[in-house]
Length: 629
Image 1 (cartoon, one colour):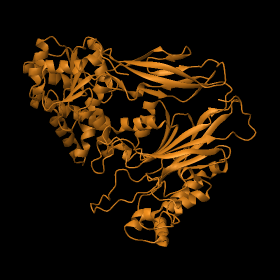
Image 2: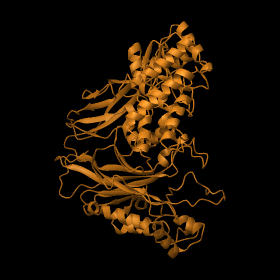
Image 3: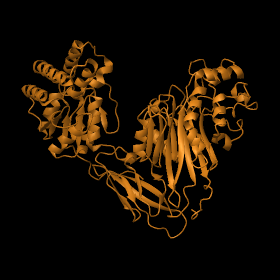
Image 4: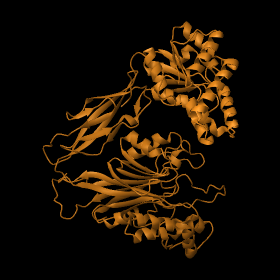
């Protein structure tokens, strides 16, 4: 549904100014102060130190220096305070356009606030210097001494808005650092960024100018009046299923974009048993069903932002009877996110769009880059387990246990036990999923297609790569789960960086530079452990359905030689246990996909295709069927 704005556009009610590097040229003074202190401690500041110096409170920077030198942080903080205050008293200079903008806002009756991560002593020195230059003062001043948490947390800007009695969405915050921008945006303000030392890119609700000389009250009013309308990333979604008589919850707040905060959620159209809470949580206990069939409960959830603009989402909740059989199908995805998605613009929203379109239940992620899994889980209202900085399990169903080493390195494996549902007698209905990532070099298809190595040499190179040892260690960790797979099914998914012996057959040799058969040892080890390749079960003929996952963005080898990149299947969804039957398995790489290196605007935010397999569950032996659903 189309988002709508209120009839009257919102109006500018206050402008909130950062101090250092925004109004006055103190960023360099602060950098020089820290550099001088660091040099005394034997450390020379470099560009890499900027995130720990610029836009940060004194305590943070003092803590960084203390960790490097062993000097007490409190002692360093006091020394930095004194040295910086002295520099400010003698050298502070208003930045171009600062006094003119402050004066114009005062003349037009727009309240202003100073919001700084500097201590009050320094702020008062700067305010006095501005007064000497002709500024009449701020309505409110918020310093590092006034809130428990300072930038990049939203607390300073929220405190200023409370003191001014204005909503954050009706204010423009003027900032010069990414840290300050993050603070203002988290508070829900519109942002005017005037970068000083670190690049800041435009974004919805954020305008970037080169200098305050370009800013006027009318331009600031336009930032509020033209604030982006809220929108949901998708028009509708289907939640995990609910069971009559059992509590149900879901969350939708993470799917809203472009809204002026705070955002509240309401639903005029919903089933009687469901409550839509203001924070975007849906909860309730479905009423008993009159018959055995699944009923889809539908709610229209409306997000209302601080300006009164709205967006709408249709939420469908499948509801089954209290004694219905446990969930009998599950969709499983394996997906390498490509360094968390960093090479592609807006990668997080694009990842969400992929997951929602695929309608998956359980996902094994590789190259999750620490933040991807928690951010995706928060947006979707799902559950996640992250291990190390590279591996994660993401699921719409609750996690009941985590498996493997939580501190695993870039390569390795991590697992989780997932509760999909309950059987009619109340016993849990679960599966175990492991996600794996194996070493990427040397790479077998290059050895074969580029260097002409034959099958025995390829096997030796696989052992040289470390992948054989890695998969054997992973399978050893999985051994207890595999031993019980007929009771609780086990999945192993991942980017193995190795082909399958099921693909490199004699018949398929033309697809692989004339090589085949090749008995690739990694896939063979997985097979010996009792795991089956779901894609090849669904598509037995590797000639008719190659299923390549590497690589949708590399039709040609990236060394510039012009050689065709070997297209191969190196991402897998394996399964073990008699209870799982493959219904279908596909590879996915959708939307606009330009080849490397022009990938920033791609719709598909990865260099791998994903694998999605739908499984059907057989009922455990001896368990009653319950009602059909």
